[in-house]
Image (cartoon, rainbow, N blue to C red):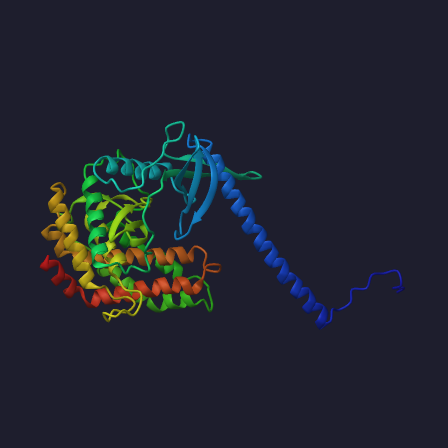
Amino acid sequence: MDTSQMLHYSELNTNQLFNLFSRSEQLKIIASHFTELMEKSLIRNQILDVFKLYDLGEVKEVYEIFGGYVNKSFGVYTEKDGKTYEYFVRKYKKGITEMEMELEHSLIDFSIAHGLDIAAGLIRSKEDKTFVKLTESQDDFKEVRYFAVYDFLTGEDKYTWDTPYLTDEEYKSSAEVLATFHNASREYDPKGRERVEPKILEFIPTLPKTYKEFAQLDLPGNKCHIYYLQNLDRILEVIDRTEIPEEAVAKMPYNPIHSDIHPGNLKFRDGKAVGIFDFDWAKIDLRLFDVCEALVYFCSSWDELPDGSTDGTLRLDKCKIFLQAYQNKLKKLGGLAPLNETELEYLPTMVAAANIYLINWDVTAFYADPENLNVYEYKTYLQHNVRLMDWIEEHKQDIAELAKSL
């Protein structure tokens, strides 16, 4: 064979391979930066297109607001008639239905009109809609994405759901905001609109099937998955025990609930909660569930604290401040009744249910993309709620005594 006119495929030496590897790493960084820049430019252009559907002036600046895991949020400056205005813009998660947004938005409107004056109000489009839609398309694929524009709330974003270390005055004020919302929305008529997610006591029994499916996933060495498998049996046992008799449920009021009530969804100023937002999980459910989810979010420790609390401790002294303020505010408002005897009796069970609900968020969010999400971040979330689950089970009598003391 005469090879003089042929191209020789020779073996690369170590130095050549290292050189190519280094260049591939540089290309990876360049591609990442390019993708990030394109995403920012795309979203900015989408917001410009959104504001063309409103009579709110010219968009001047767009800032992403971090903290959410499901929807994307933005602060937007506009200029109209020589004046500068601020708005809050939400790009909703994929898959949300128009009925769910109509439920959320009509509930916000109703609640503001009936006394919840610190909620972020919705801005109407030129066509008098509370949300608008844009189409994202590639080749033959098309997907509708929804946007809504809100008043921008003043106040400080002082806390997040994993740093819930409020002052006692702020705990009290936060509980009063929740009570005010429940009272303002008590006569809201959803007109057949429902959240896709079932009510809490219908939802909890459906979880074991999903959790067992997660356990079958092949994720060798994944530390979050390993931790999940180590604790799955205990989680399933708690789910099995978490039920409330129908005759007791019949004595508990259903009401519009926020369903994502944590310190990161409130604005604060001078020791007071001065704004509430993020109603995109709102639905009609047992009022007690909303209160108990608030206790889990507001009053659990994520760290070692001076009062002796550690990660996964429910701080009962803070729970008492919150619950007493909630009860007192409803008594003062004179509309929706405070937590009744049956609700207080089943408070420990519903606290457990609320924490299971958050465990479900931990695992469904993680297993949606287990190979790309931060394993250690999601293990931290799951570990917190599993520790809290164990603490609640061991201290149900203490929680019951707290409820009796109100």
